[in-house]
Length: 203
Image (cartoon, rainbow, N blue to C red; front, top):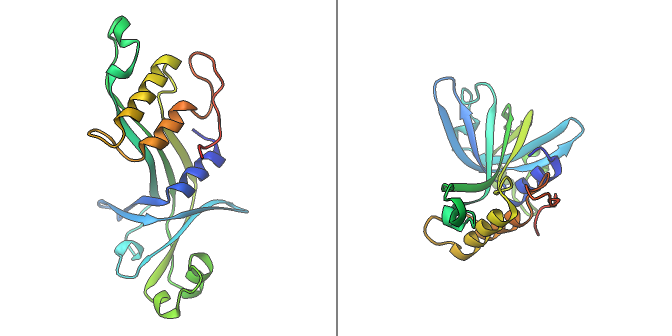
């Protein structure tokens, strides 16, 4: 899914990223909230981390870093497809909505930069001394929308109803209600039955 506005909306709604960095020997993952913003040169991700977090230290940023934003996911049972009663050629799967963004990680060990970029009103100077700013100019970004859009309308909607009924029960991931919205109106393109799919993010 390469609809940039839609991808940015997903990040805005689910800003906690799994930030993958590499030191040349092994990868590391840190959970860091990041904000996406559009600039004259493109999209960038900005945030800050506690000074004790090693992610900002020299030697942690070999090549590009990867920020993964997971919006929603849920197990999909093959029994939820009406077509199973017809031919039984169905298998279990897992639906999800996520965004992957790649770019070099920049460190801004400067309270003025952190205050200008991220600090909320009332953030005091003493606190600023304990955080470090980070910025990722995004070189590549893609949305991963696995919402049964390739299925026929009856199977897609049957799976959607299964997610809605299952809710946060066993096998559920995060935000089942949000996945129900995406499965009701898959973004980008048409369903196999030819019905136009809405491109706006669910509210």
